[in-house]
Image (cartoon, rainbow, N blue to C red; front, top):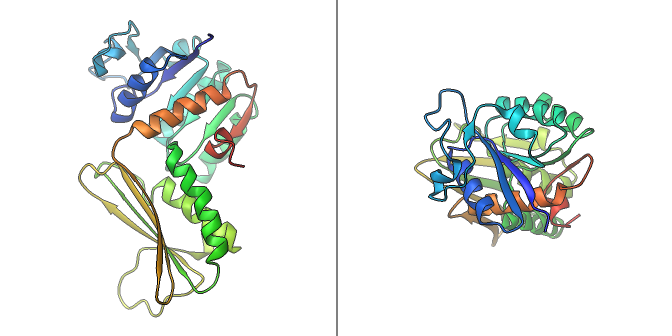
Length: 268
């Protein structure tokens, strides 16, 4: 069996460690490189030791050298770091799975441009369950298209730097598309003071940040006399890592193209 050769960015972070553990446990994947920021105390250490599974792969800052050995880079870091890695991946003809969120329009355009040369899976959430929820939201929005107000509520740990989450925004995009609305013009990000009556065409977003919440998302369809709530809750980062590895398998052997998890799961 030919194994997918995986490189992981942000190796010492919470998501990086989960990706290392998941890759090392997969029979059809091989960890060939792991990267961390210059100055990290983990540089030079065995990446597997972070998850009590020594593997002989040292954590390094030399991304270009590591990508030369890899089929796919999995990156859940920050937009500026991910975009730098993207250029190096393109130079190395290495595929990329991007779970980073918080990109500007320019950043998203750079990802799309790179995907003309290499295969890229770019998704706001890699968890298979979340992507099932995206499909459920399409159906719910079509059925509940009249007489229901839509609110998106999300909660994450105190260290998350962007809000609303990429997953919450994608949920809003899915619902808005099915309702024939433009999320950029109908989204309301928080309310304060005397706001007046709710505009029925808006989609509201509420953000909670605290503690170590991995990720909770609810889309509320509030009608007269009833409420429908579609919720996904993550109790660990394992679903994101498992989905990322599935995405890496999906692009293995592909020459180029921009994909998301709906493509990976065959939901389109």
